[in-house]
Amino acid sequence: MSLREVCPCGSGTAYDACCGRLHRGAAQAETAEELMRSRYAAFAVGHLDHVFRTWHPRTRPAVIEPDPALTWTGLEVLEAGTSHVEFVASFVRDGVTGQRRERSRFERRGGGWVYVDGQTG
Image (cartoon, rainbow, N blue to C red):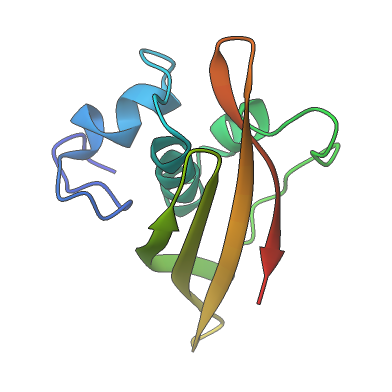
């Protein structure tokens, strides 16, 4: 992804000035919503190390594998609170469109936000 392209998180800002700075460790998310958006963008552009680093160690899987058949195509934030975010993420897998709706929980840990878990529906 070009650093000047619009960030996949849907902010309308250039990737480098938005989630790119979080992915490369130049900044930390200030809110649960900002972290959730950066995690979505990380899945979309393949920065799975960011996803792993921002997942609570108590709940994260041992390994996060890329899915080459999956392309993330859009994000809509439905509700954002202090420690939760509800969203719909659109995708295409093997040519079939779909959506993932989730209410994610976040915690402050070590001075930054981490993803704890989420309920899909």
